[in-house]
Image 1 (cartoon, rainbow, N blue to C red):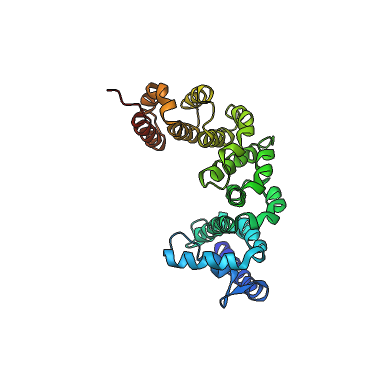
Image 2: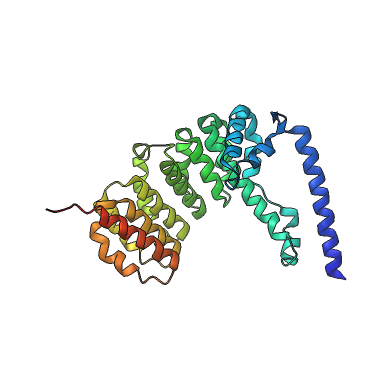
Length: 289
């Protein structure tokens, strides 16, 4: 009886939320080509055909800064009023899809920041506040904006809150990987990243390693430091250390014995990263006649 009552409340809340959501979207969202912004954002889904995503990209560019309020809101997408019901009814068909939809909204919003790039810089103050939450998609959004967001990223590296410092390093790593900033832009962050390699929080260590793998400065210092992380207690840190060493190429040749030992790591994801690192580092070895 109690369960039926809970299900009834869940369905009623869902119907009300959907009704209000549809009304709000239709009344307040900007449109382009006869479609609301949220519809175009949904078309950024990587599972959709390239032509569909290309159309969405053009639409987001046409919206420009008018898209920012929706993008920032979607970065925070969640269903707090349903959380306890979902916990109580975790076996209810379809309940997990609501949570998955929230993550997908965040992901698509982050992609939209890459599309707008520097044009989205007016959202930086809001994103700075959002970094205080444990939301990795904000890192991607800042990375998408590029150099204008660099001071926010670097200042956050010094945060005493572990997930903030970790997400800041993640933002730098993503920005370097996506080439929205240059390695020379972040050389000054290296001492802080080096300190964060020894942080007590694995999230901070993991993304400090990732960022240093993209910067690839001072291999005589950081290759041994990353080698030490191959023995970290956290599998995510060990995997990221192997991946970072791979990016040092020829300069990582001295750690081949340590990487070879890491092939026995109990975690399959770590072993996969180690195998890839060994393959690429060995390829970089100078040929002798």
